[in-house]
Amino acid sequence: MGLFTELKDSISRVMDRLFTDDEPKRIGIYGPPNAGKTTLANRIARDWTGDAIGAESHIPHETRRARRKENVEIERDGKSVTIDIVDTPGVTTKVDYEEFTDEMEEDDAIRRSREATEGVAEAMHWLREDVDGVIYVLDSAEDPITQVNTMLIGIIESRDLPVLIFANKIDLDESSVKRIEDAFPQHKTVPLSAKEGENMDEVYENIAEYFG
Amino acid sequence: MPTTTNTDEPDAPDGVQIDLISGERMDGMATMEKIRMILDGVHDGNIVILEEGLTPDEESRLIEVTMAEISPDEFNGIEIETYPKSDTRKSSLLGRIMGGDEPTTKLTVIGPANQIKTLHKDETLISALVSRD
Image 1 (tube, helix red, strand yellow):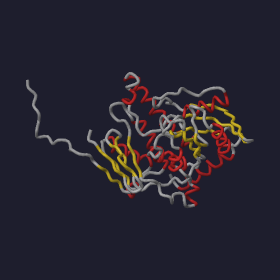
Image 2 (cartoon, chains in turn red, cyan):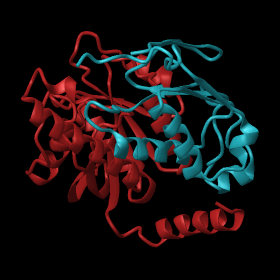
Image 3 (cartoon, one colour):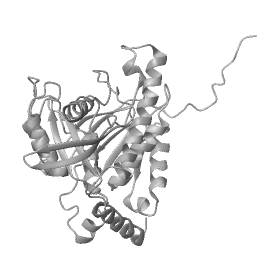
Image 4 (cartoon, helix red, strand yellow):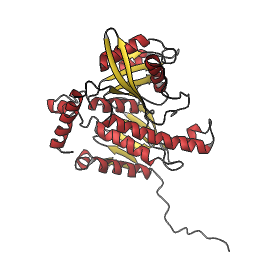
């Protein structure tokens, strides 16, 4: 891309943000597979609209299409924000259908892996074109320093998108929020358990403050 | 009629090819040319090592194109490892104006997901195990 084109695109992105302040912000929920993105998206959607977004499962790639819940109005401590929550498939660089054959028939596993690859491609496209901010969900019981996490955080930073890191699954014994804070010290990390509903007040405070 | 085997034909090379691609070579290539070169190498079972890595936008597109090419029993994706980004990234005003979309890495190793396994990575060392299966 040429210098002029880059400059034009950069100015265009800034202008787009300036003139869309009244529109709901599209907040993408990103992270690796099985971090609890859909559980979190459902928790937020249920708390503020009464409806869920999608099915949750322990099998990776349960979410294979980006799904959006529009006009979720979140209020905390006098601050409020209206967001469209975009729940995305877990990002990865590899999908092997054989990982699913313990749980389902081969044909279903192949179909699931095909849908998962399309979903990940779509999620990457959304990240480049269609989100105004990112909630990055990590499983706090897992090592956060993986290539995909580092790469995705780098991609988000390069687009100057506001990002909050959510250290999910603090209800698990192996959970370590500090490990995530140490891995990505440049970003605010908020601990929570989306499944148990722990620390959701702080979650909503930060969403209202960061994206409002 | 019994079948015969031509033992004069040379066997396929018994090893793993490693493509070491200089930053200079990458400089003159468009994003999709780089991605095509990387994925063509990986499809052939090669390990591709980039001297200067990829920009965040190129990394994003590499994931997207990789997903489009995954196929059951043939290609199940890539394994990728990179040294941590430099702290000096986005230090310039121009870099910040442009969204910091400049190369962030010193060296990147990419290989077929079913053949490469990262054993260890830190700021100065990437150890990878490559199988021939």
